[in-house]
Amino acid sequence: MSGETKETCFDEFVAAREQFEKLMGELRSDSARILEHGEVESLIARRGMSCCGV
Image (cartoon, rainbow, N blue to C red):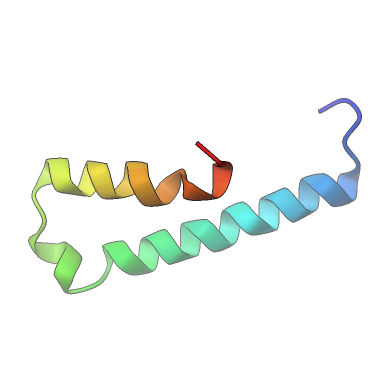
């Protein structure tokens, strides 16, 4: 974290928190309730990492 300001770190935290909330909303949806375990893992891998540029 050297060279990063507290504001930058906070902005990254806020973005990650927003992404997490979106992912949780999707996982709680009716359409997600019928997914198989592997499909849920794939959804998390795709959606959970989209904010990180991965």
